[in-house]
Amino acid sequence: MVGKRLIMMGPPGGGKGTQAKRIQERYNVLQLSTGDMLRAAIAAGSPVGKQAKAVMDAGKLVSDDLLIEMIDKRLDDKDCANGFVLDGFPRTIPQAEGLENLMANKGLKLDAAIEVRVPDEKLLERLTGRYTCAKCGEGYHDKFKLPKAAGVCDVCGGKEFSRRSDDKADTVKTRLKAYHAQTAPLLPFYERKGVLKVVDGDRDIGLVAADLERILGL
Ligand code: ADP
Ligand code: ADP
Ligand code: ZN
Image 1 (cartoon, rainbow, N blue to C red):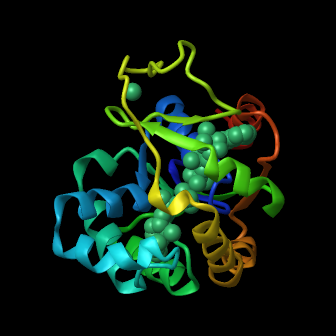
Image 2 (image 1 turned 90 degrees about the vertical axis):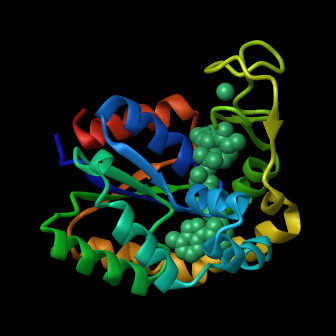
């Protein structure tokens, strides 16, 4: 079994959140989605949220300093002690370097960086069909992951769902550009460090999950 400090990387809509959630449950580690943290900050009207909102609506990346500080603080919380899977962070080389520094300062070692690989032409459909349970945050898809009973969340029984405003086709294009220009360079960065693990994300959710369990030695 590889250790319990993981990064989940991949393009928007690649399945990072879906797989990170499964790892959280199977592996007893905490999923930390920076996108969720930023959306919570926006909903709360906090200064961080105010700074992030326009950038996120435009499909661009929020500032490195803000993200690094957010993660630096969050990893000190008790619920991260058994391990974590970072979902959506780091997204730039400065963030990756920032993570390396802050983990070194805390005496922590990164065990694996997982790339969920999905070709661009699949992502638009993944993103425009995505929705989540408003109550518990469970993720669904119009075509690829329907609740067992129509309109009712499998996990909590909730009946309200929401869609992200940045999952519209035109914003998705900007997000994909940002991924290729700013985030894809992290793949060779982690490969050089010997921690990169690639999983083929262009298959059924269950098959991707099984492959990941094998890779992580679960
Ligand atoms: P990310 O966190 O990388 O943006 P998500 O996990 O939110 O991606 O997945 C995006 C959408 O695609 C969601 O609606 C999810 O249910 C769906 N999805 C995730 N993995 C797969 C898969 N392997 N095949 C088809 N659809 C998927
Ligand atoms: P997805 O699951 O589709 O990849 P996320 O929920 O991870 O999207 O992120 C949504 C938005 O939040 C991003 O488009 C970006 O504006 C912002 N964001 C999230 N994580 C980061 C990060 N590490 N650095 C900069 N911006 C981020
Ligand atoms: Zn629910």
